[in-house]
Amino acid sequence: MSAGRAAAETAERFGGDRVRITESYGETTLDVTDPGDWIEVLTALRDSGYAFFDWLTGVDEPPETFVIVAHLYDPVACRRVLVRTSVPRAEPRLPSAVGVFRGADWHERETYEMFGVVFDGHPNLVPLLLPDGFEGHPLRKDFILAARVAKAWPGAKEPGESGHGAPSRRRTLPPGVPADWGKAPDA
Image 1 (cartoon, rainbow, N blue to C red):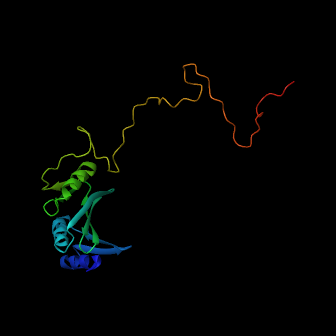
Image 2: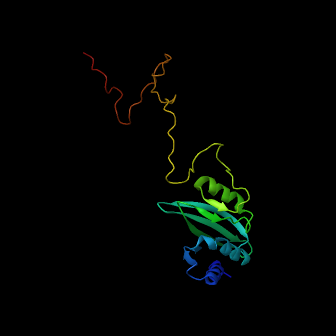
Image 3: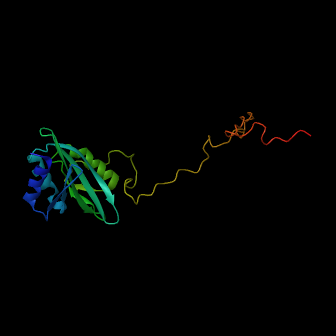
């Protein structure tokens, strides 16, 4: 069964108003219109052979949504499918897929930390990568990067400006400029 056929059967099972299927450049994608159907669709795909949970991430789509994308793989039939759903930006929540795919644990924690998407029912939804006390979600498009402390970089000086008395380097001329260019003529 091709990836498109297995995904099409899943989409038919849920109906076109709950799951839409698209195929683009050989990539099959299932769009889950209601985030409440997320676990049921993932379970149906797992049961149809997509037993390997490859990855999950978020995509920031301002001003109103986050798109959550999961990549599933069938190692026997060598087929893959993308499954995605949208959650509201103001309250980004989605049921945890850890009960369906154990590999979702790490990915959901990372998406929680980087985007602020809460995965309801996750067994250990705590920060994973950022240092303790870090505030904010750095992969959100509205995250403001703090400017580093305004301090001169030690290598930002021109040759001869080191301040420790070293001689300046010889300046090289651009190609095609004569060596005596800029020197005063002998009188």
